[in-house]
Image (cartoon, rainbow, N blue to C red; front, top):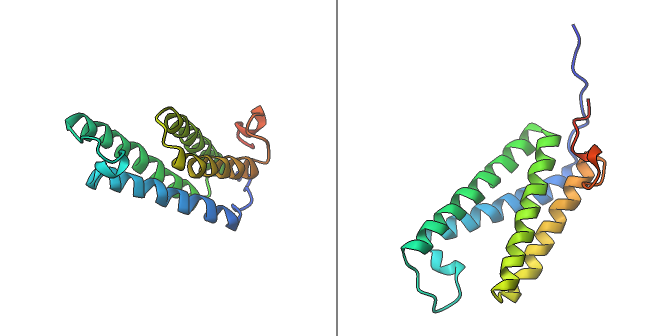
Length: 139
């Protein structure tokens, strides 16, 4: 019987990136669900359309948070790396939206979150994320 090659365990420091990141995503989802007004600038009217889009944010953030934690707990290196890159890309897009809408105080935190996730993804694949080797399974 042929056994599949085993990959080394994920490094412990990855917990310090993925778990807080997943918790931040989940916290954003809970805020959007319970009090979407906290996501808007003061004085902005919260109407039905805002609630619809807040619902989309809840779904997006919870799905990412759950999958990040599940792939981390499974040690699924390739899937975790891909999810980390996706999360970072979403954060960069969020930062771009923050720039366009003048929410300057949020941008540094969002960009740092994205960069840390990209760093972690690159480290666990063993290749820079801009190289094809980072996206291929190590078989």
